[in-house]
Image (cartoon, rainbow, N blue to C red; front, side, top):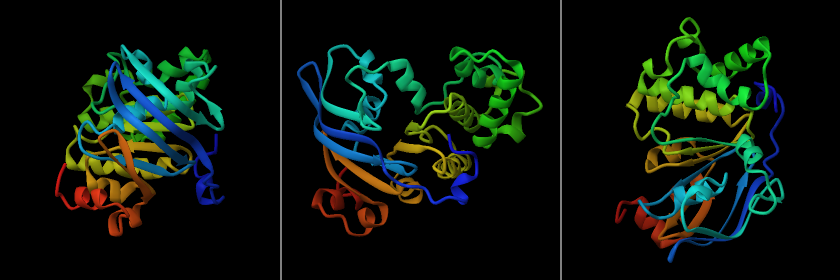
Amino acid sequence: MVPAGAGSEVAPVHKTRISVENVNLYYGDHHALKDVSIDIPEREITSFIGPSGCGKSTLLRCLNRMNDYVKDCRVEGSIKLDGRDIYADYNTTLLRQRVGMVFQHPNPFPMSIYDNVAYGPRGAGVKSRSELDALVEDSLRRAALWDEVKDKLKESGLSLSGGQQQRLCIARAIAVQPEVLLMDEPTSALDPISTVQVEQLAMELKRDYTLVVVTHNMQQASRISDSVAFFLLGELVEHAPTTQMFKAPRDQRTADYLTGRFG
């Protein structure tokens, strides 16, 4: 794990952290992802955009094998994390420690703020109270929530506002010290002020983490992303640096979507 703030001192090397190669996914007879290949660079924000049902969240859930829980779901092709295929002989518990996830709607556990954040480390075997205290504080600081909750850590996580709950879920996800953070429309249920807070947090977190964000919000994708991938009908139409994607998309379907002609 790179120490907090190290990104300002050492220029990050944006090598490929996740490599998706010729992935096809089926829900029964439905072909949901069609021959998708994409490289996810380390310590950047890659956003997935596209109309509803286009495959972006489906691919996101493949990156930590959340689709394993879906009946009749079949994945072909390879997805490699640091060069190792996660669909081969790979421990899914370890995978989900390395590749955390934040969902569309905030989902704190019905327990205290402290216990929400400590839940993952405890499950990983951390028993020392001082170590847990340090992990909880560090995670809440990284999630830009510490100053708001430091005096009420024993209160329920459900007592927080929607935006605070989402940042609590981010703190919970990073408490197990993942390397990749998946975010599935993390601001769609939030008010504008909370949305800005989560966007700023995402841009700060990329100093230490690789982020993949699914969003329907074109302005959000343009604000926070280093690169953007456009999906349509299960296909990856285009993946490009954000400025290029929004100013000079190569594919007419991308241009039509970005200008509101469909979607």
